[in-house]
Length: 140
Image (cartoon, rainbow, N blue to C red; front, side):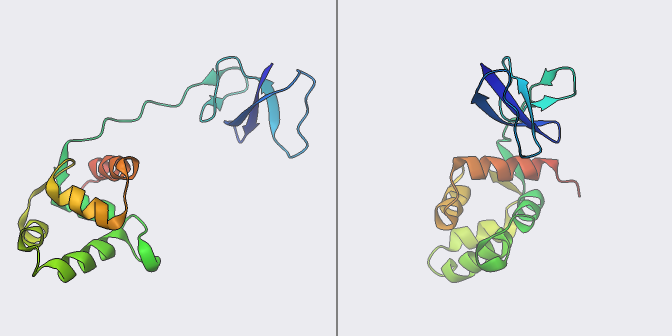
């Protein structure tokens, strides 16, 4: 039987066990039905996680920079620090990159500016999507 392991009203794992299974780590075990990790349990029923918002095709440069500032980067700084360092180091070799960083008003998710920075920062598609989703929530 599928058993949901519940911690703080959240499904943290699904295991195969019989209905007599009792965890010894402070979690609860409840027959899972269709529930999976990330679902919640209100004491009566399971609820799926909310749908993730769509990834915006572009965001304003302010929102992009603020999302970078709010995201941890390398060496204990933020991604904003990492991008600024990269742009400064490459401005002579790639002046368009430096101009885009300084003057662009919007940042396109699939644009050359983003793909170049993502490659340097080793950000995969999921990480970029998360940054763009975060940026879309930021208000000036």
